[in-house]
Length: 482
Image (tube, rainbow, N blue to C red; front, side, top):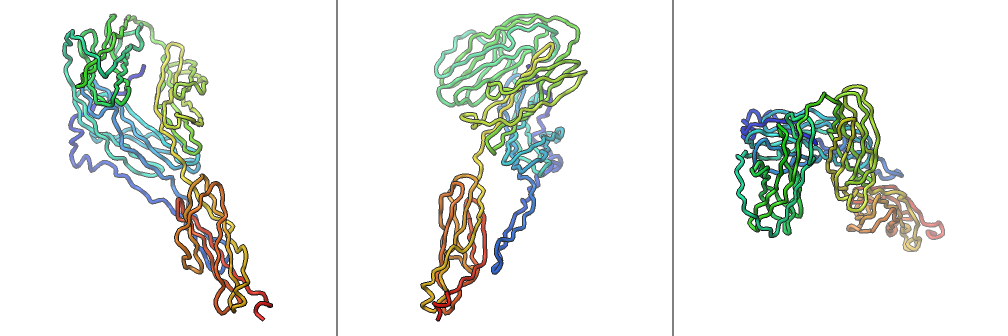
């Protein structure tokens, strides 16, 4: 089991003064450096000047697990956001959380490498002991500086009420609940000892209100949108040995439902301090180049210990290992990029489970779905492919045929046009490109001349921009001009 780091936020956070809001760091969006191509008539080939650009970065608006949290306090609120970084090698992603009360979180730095866009999902859990209306934002400090929009949430504390014994009708909603662990032996110090989890299933997407009933009294409220099924939970920290049960109840306009009892047992037993291990700071990253996912996390130990760990992707074990501690400390473990397939490409969940000498722990985090790579277009081998001398009999230069090769990193439809002596020759043409394809164009001979010369350029305008240019000069055979 895990407990969140408490952060007390006042209700005034939502209505912060102009001075506080003005202190927030605004996002700076730097335009990416562009690579330009200059075609020069009379000289073969293409002159290009390329400037290395910093990786493009975008960040989503943070979202709370439930925007309106209504129940008995303390209340936990999970906040998450996604940062996309377009990579071409290695970079460091630095970010921190901005809080609605004007404070700032600790700067965190992640090392990223690869090619293509990587999606990094970040999150935090806040605990509130009183009513709050606030917001959270993400400030990215590198490789580019920008700040997300504010994600708002609220917490309303409600007193527990006695539940009557009426039976609830089951219509379109089904509910189940269980305790984790169902039996606990150890010190009864503050902090969750037993987690109660419940699953709500609905026949049609709907907003539902739910409440947790512990030993006959309502101890927690909530309201959430359920599309098919959803898991809700609350933690309980008993101060003395006891046994009892919890029930999850859902009340909606379409009917009401109540789970079976989730029984638990607690034996408060003092014991000498022992080495404890924990897993924290799990971060996932989706690499769209090849549709891969990786992760890293921190394993902590309060003393000398050997800790075994296992990585799971969507519930399936994919990697394992062990780390040793000579004394209290932390170690970072990584899950190298794994190729995704099937439904896993649409997003999923990564879990790190650890086992120490005296306890076990685990941490989970979702990962973003793969995005289809954008095609990269290039133009090559632009040259004269032939000449037509039939024009020479009419005192004109020969006709000229050109050929070029268009290449794409992924199958796509390419739009392009030809330019002769700086003038566009035709409307956009289209070709299906799978790998590479040759395209051709021809022009008639020059008037009152025995030679046809100038410059030719092929310009690709969609789905990516690319071009190539060269000069040409062809002459009529001497016999044709006699």
